[in-house]
Length: 187
Image 1 (tube, helix red, strand yellow):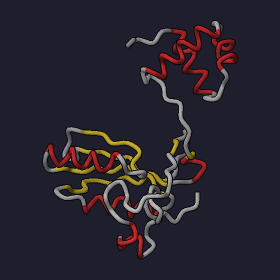
Image 2: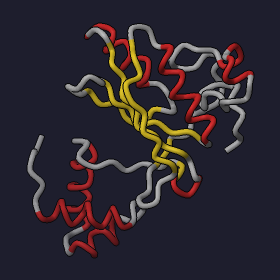
Image 3: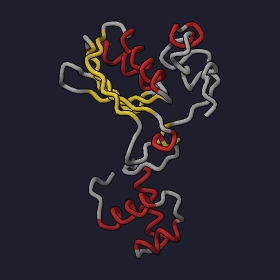
């Protein structure tokens, strides 16, 4: 695995940032290299996970709401369990370990204010975990943030909860988990 990106790699990445759907032929022309060389470089960049090419709903365009949440998980074993549960959550964009009191930092999204608030409140129910801070970010002003779409076919959410029995869902404070058949948003 290579660790250093050279000038050609950087040129390729810049072109892909402009248009992730550019053809290899056009990409090669734009970076002034051969199609074969660019194709090999592109494959290596993707295979080594140096670049990410993906689709998703545009959080800015959809006016989705975002927040940063800090959790204090009381033990290492508990933190691993929290991470395992939240990795599968469609509303969690990123999970970070920190060395602060809030030792798990989450970036989360919701379609509207009640749903993101409900998502954040659900973190209070995680055993041996305290919600230390929450920063509502609102909808993105600059930059595009892709939100994954999930098939709505599960009975139980990836976190192990059932939307149909959740008081937040029943009281319509939450649209439900996007990975379940109870999800109310039609996107």
